[in-house]
Image (cartoon, rainbow, N blue to C red; front, side):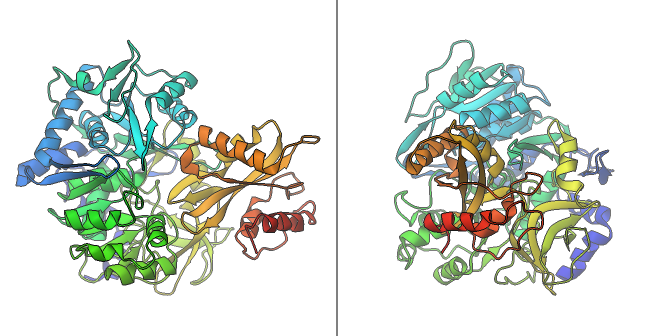
Length: 630
């Protein structure tokens, strides 16, 4: 059966198509309801089905004879630690920790915030929450205390699970003081905190609130997997909002389980017993979908890597992992490969390893430039496959279907064709569909397929306003691009105020709030500029208050420190340029779209609404003097 036939079948009768895919899941009780629409316009799937995703990832695998197969290969070059954890062992650890949570009063529907580095205990925490029906919210360990506090207040967790530290290269990052500061800032106070003490740093525990990870589990009884409904939330994952306030994307259990099983097999071409590597972090959607839940549900061995692509100990780190664990396929953001190429442009380090197990690699999260793609393809001699998805989607939206007999070939500059279930259209600003080859807003015609987020925690109206109102009947992705005559999708960039830093979506509005809070700053605009390694990095254009006196370099240093403290090192905020004024509309709105194009040397038209056109040459001169444009 051809791609086109399957794709058209998924759009022609979505309920029938996804009912068939749902048969790949072991339900406690199969669903009788397929797609259902919420009262605010989104879609949920399999609402009355009964299942447990922890059961599917662990108990089912052991029951099918994979108990002795490795579930997680933990590889931590930063601590010189390696561990092979079998499905049977992981099941025992998860069941015990789930029992400890339940004994402490964590029940179905309670929220649990997980703020941990890439250690196996983080996966145990996620799976244990899913096992008892608690809703976990993983917060990336690179976020500052202020960001953690915002998420604590929004999710209102009963418990926080954390570790004493994370490690970046040779630097130990204390997590517990960040958690303590976040709790001091937060209005909501969890009942208790569980701390995993790492040998690299012992955290000081607060009596009456903090519990040692090992002590917490002593005397607990292993918990069986509870029955949850397909419509029950599995997790909340916060993604950047254009206003600066993060959006708590809610993922349901049933649709997500079906989507991940489908994607692992049909999109990524993985089968039980294969070794898969999602080279990301559990704080991001990739970590949820394709480090923990997807690979384990599919019976694969998943790499759980704590390290960087370079300096751990060198730019051959990725090749060592592929060779040592016989990785069959992997996923990574292009940033990692650009960093490797910079350190080892001839690829000499790769030639020291046997990479013959590798079938293909997937990249996503940011634009894959043709130079990096060609370098990687020549070096590894396997297909390099670009694809596209978002936190909101939870799984790919465009990709070659590598599990099918005739997958779509890769095409330079394209993230490939839409995956079944995704009716992708290119619309102009008035909502009219554009012809092939013309750039516009990338939108998805409703209904959305299983696994797609169907709400924002405590604020479903915000979901509707953010994604469904601009183009009625469509989900607005926030990405711009075009479609060619063969149906291939090309992403040209974001159309909103979110930038992509090394595959991580971050809000420029949030950074603007931090910069604007400096006592000498009158106003500012933060935009994304191109970076050879990370794809994009933030740049602040800053207007000082009248009669203040500070050197530009000193102000930049202070602003960098502020953003690092309040947003986190993940923002990679390093540059601020002083300008006399910012271009605005007559109604006073900063023309950020023009600034973005200017900073990336794109052609732009003079906006008809601009208040003072003479400001734009001033900005150009400032950007040239700072070395951002030629």
